[in-house]
Image (cartoon, rainbow, N blue to C red):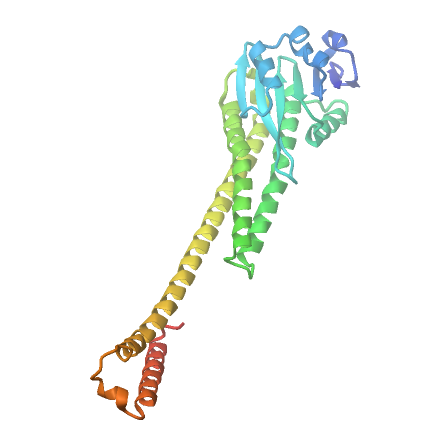
Length: 315
């Protein structure tokens, strides 16, 4: 589907014009949105707009890394939209020309629709140009990064206070959150670098008038990057705590087993001594010898157990 939005020199907003009508001298600037384009519609990027073949190729190959390329007077940006529920990334391509912007995406996106509504609903005489429209698109995309990040933060807080600290299911949840943070990292950091390049480029002359808006997006991305690093550190701390707790439990188990083994060592020695088949062993002929040995073994075991317990080796 292709939709168009144009602003005239009298600052009137027009919608759904044919592409051929956008060249009218009365048009101040326009926005063309390609949403789920067919193969025939996608070819218009080359046949009508004459975009660079490399930029068109990037549009056709899904999920490129966020970046910015300059082709004469056309500037090509690859950005990512993130679905808050699944954190899945969807590519959004943006062409910025001398008096137009073109967005290209392979699936409908709520962020683009919201930006379209905002720009189309602006009052007459309030127009700020096509770069402001590009800002609104980027701002809507970045704003949708926050819900997913906040959700992961809430999950981490719940895990930190969970009574099931240290079990396998708890650790699987920690690693799941860490993987989701890594997925966000693949989008947020390149987008931050993209905005930094955009703020410092000298290839877009009109950008100076809109610089404050793009700085605001960059600030949001810096905040997201800080949140990302902080949450990754929390998952690392939780992982280290899990490893330390398991090591402590293993040491306690090994200590208990060692104590039990130590208690049974003298008992095994006594049993082995009187289990030898020598003829001249006076104790074997004692009437109360068997009972006496059992009493000695019991006293020895109980005494060693009590001594180890006072030492705190069973804690």
